[in-house]
Image (tube, rainbow, N blue to C red; front, side, top):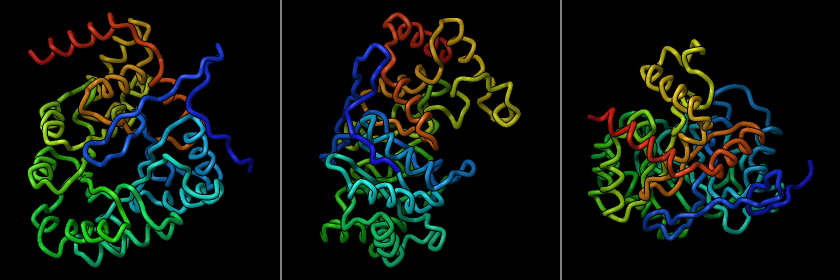
Length: 320
């Protein structure tokens, strides 16, 4: 496998190099690119992916200037493959930031004790081939017992201890649900949060949460801006799996609108999420180098101000 050449952005057909902007992630002190690579697809959660394809995808993301990769023990083979990709580069490149997650390792799933937290983080470091990692998120899918997470001897206590030991830099929360994130923000012990599904073209029910996080100095990573494929570019009603989802009709309406206005729907969806000043980075998954390239192209595509004015007006009308 040829070692990738790291650069700083996407080269258009015109020869122009388009770099990805960076934003500070809350009080972590870390600047992340506005587009991040999600690891679930790399680990095989959405279909079979070979080790070689996953490593090539990671390398291509770094070559295009993405500097944050979202990772979790929950994501199948993601950590092992990410470790292989880093080893091929001779280690973690300067300025590249990774995360891992605690609470959803298959062997310790739902265990938010200090012992399980330490075991999970140290196991992740071993698989990644690292002595320390920038970001660790307390992780759950749709529900989490914040009392246990915040209790003495719980997850956050141990993550703070690991941080004091130099094994991690910042602590986050990754779960679905505004109330959990509000509890995290109010605790003052989380540097950033990862939320998903509720701030997109289809609905903006997390808008107030993003404001609250910004006011508290808490960074925001945003997942699933494409709503697991509903806003990925094709008509969602033409896909049996997508058509069965509750947001399919709303996504179809945006698909029609984007087609009428001759704007690629993925570019519109990802850039809409990025336009909120409280969002540090939007995480978009990929399992091939081509998918990474498509995401970077979507992020860097110029969209006229007039289009954004119409988007905002359409959203305002739907809220009324």
